[in-house]
Every structure is written in structure tokens, then in C-alpha cells.
Length: 156
Image (cartoon, rainbow, N blue to C red):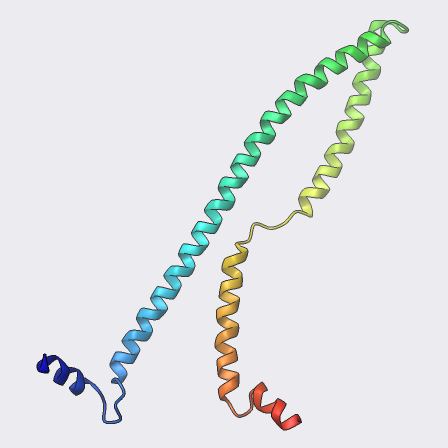
């Protein structure tokens, strides 16, 4: 056990600090660990978002199919109702033109909504990286004599 202590003591510098080689090695390991953690967070967040989008899209497609059958039935009912007053071909033509106009309006509104939609950005990863960046600069500012902590004291 004395050999382990003496080896550790020999690795320390004259001031009692670890040698520069050890500090740089620890720094490299910390940076690798931090970057690996941020990448893992990014992957997890994007996987969850993609899974949620897939499930939501599947449910919307199923709902769309059911609505399509329901509208088909309502369209047939509208044509049959108009056919009691007009010839059947004219009733079908009127209902068809009305449906095409409604579809055009819905398509224009849908395109505008898609253009204004949110971008798929990993928000928590960006916040974490921004927070790390700000914390690093905050530490630098508080230790420097020209940092914000010193300027507030000077202003007071």
C-alpha cells in the first residue's frame, strides 16, 4: 500500500497538483463523455419524435379512410336527393363540381399550414448545448476582471 501512495505522490508536481499530462487526459475523457452523452440524448429525442409522428400518421390515415367512406355515402345521398328534383345526371354534376371546389379550398389551406409548420428540431439537445455554452462563458466572465460581475460592482 505504501508503494501505491508513493507512486501517486511521485506523479504530483511540486505544488501538489497533478501533472499537465494527467489534466489533459482527464479533460479529453470528460469531453468525449460529454459529446457521447449529447449524441445519445439527440438520438433518444429524435427516435421518440419519429415514433410519435409515425403512430399519429397511421391513426390519421385510418381516420381518413373511414371519413372517405362516410363522405362517399353522403355524396350518394346528396345525388339521390337532387335527383328527385332534377335529372340524375345534372344532380351528379352539381354535387361533383361542389366537391371539387371544396377540395381545392382545403388543399390551399393545407399547403399554407404545411409551410407555416414547425421544424423538426431536437429542442432539449439544443437547450442543453446552449446551456453548456452559456455556462462556460459565464464562468469565464466571472473570473475575468472585466466580466459582468466586476462591472456591476464598479457601477454601484
